[in-house]
Amino acid sequence: MGIAESLRVERAPAPIRSRVLDNLRQAILEHKLAPGQRLIERELVELTGVSRTSIREALRELAAEGLVTTIPNKGTVVAEVSVKEARQLYQVRSALEGLAGRLFVENASPAQRRALASALRGVERAAAKGPAAMLAAKDKFYDVLFEGGGNEALRSMAGTLHARVNLLRSMSLTRPGRPAESLAELGEIVAAVAANDADAAAKACSHHAESAGMAGFSALAEQAGG
Amino acid sequence: MGIAESLRVERAPAPIRSRVLDNLRQAILEHKLAPGQRLIERELVELTGVSRTSIREALRELAAEGLVTTIPNKGTVVAEVSVKEARQLYQVRSALEGLAGRLFVENASPAQRRALASALRGVERAAAKGPAAMLAAKDKFYDVLFEGGGNEALRSMAGTLHARVNLLRSMSLTRPGRPAESLAELGEIVAAVAANDADAAAKACSHHAESAGMAGFSALAEQAGG
DNA sequence: CAGCGTATGATCATCATACAATGTGATCGT
DNA sequence: ACGATCACATTGTATGATGATCATACGCTG
Image (cartoon, rainbow over all chains, first blue to last red; front, side, top):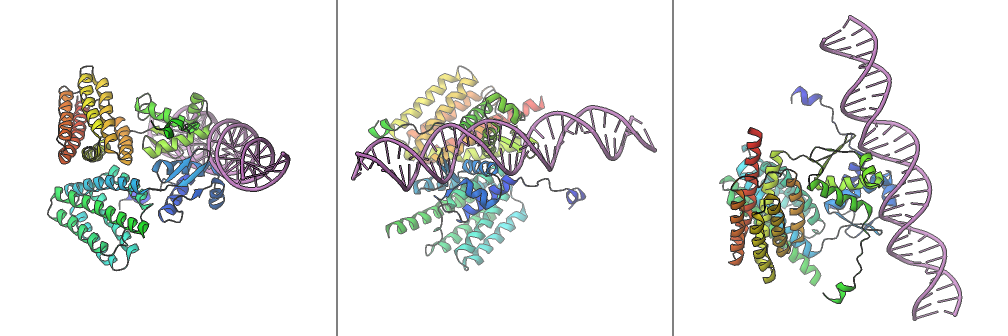
């Protein structure tokens, strides 16, 4: 690290509202706040210790991200994602991940390619430890993938998309056989990257996203049906 | 229209902040507010006649949409899109429009297919009237396209993306020969739709977006270079 | 004149408070 | 049981105050 970076004082005392925003977002993603749950401003004020102004501004941003829904004069609730909406979100996600795969092949550095292979091994190891660990490892895999593609806009859009489908996925990888299938699909991605085949990588990424969506839906259907 | 729709009273007294939001968004898209221009809260208060509270909340949403940039303790400016960012945005857009084309073939009703062909003829007519008219007609074309695909999430993401690249495109169709080229590409989309070939439609849509991006960039390069 | 420190003004960030508008549920009289 | 009415909770908007941060101008010193 050069002296310029080492001396740079972090220009981000992190405005309160963005810390509130981060906390709320995380709480939603971790399902500490369940979809449909009301977010009453006064309660948030008490919980966080910040003023209503800041709370409201944070809520506006969450609303723009699609993580909460605001009903005028009624209030704000954690967004609920219908199955239909989730299907749409997965379609979009599939398209974006296809692009991510292509860009990775086209732009990733050798180190990033190694990191992707390494992340795959991480997922393999995590697969044994249960769904939660595997999800975390997959997030890491995707981090590397999007990072290597070098497209910030893509990464951020995929991120908000991921957050939104996450509202629904409590059941993604709970189907027997799905983890192994998922692993195989990730393997194909890495293989396509190794072969430097952008089209194949795009297809593999897109296919994986689609297939993950399908798995979630059939789990959902079973749950609803049973 | 069924009785349910005909009796539905429009539940939307339109909170002030969302009207402010709409107005600001439109002003930005119409380049009445230029990229880089500062948006000073006090001035916005005076211009709009609403309180700072509402202004700030609207600005937070615009920031989440990527249309403005907020620098802590400094202020809010209309977002500036660098060429690099625009390239990334066009890549994403291309992927999304590819999906849109595929979904249209898969889901659009006969009426919507006719509307698409009709929209194409509208673009042809508008092409003679200059770039502005053609842009408007193309927006209409895309409206039909996304509508027919039936994916709301896709539509809305494409919308915000469109808004963001719009920050940069004053020169998209000003290149000689580009309008004709653009028309031909739209024609291919419609042809693929007529042939019910989802893959071809996806490719045609994606190609058109990509090619529009390229045209914009070379125009930009000329401008910078000359 | 270059460099430094200070004064000053503009603007944002946050907060506390107030009041109006709206929706919700309880109460009450019949 | 039914409808009107009232009370309460919550959001929507406005206002004023205070502190923080940044940009700029100014003046001092060597």
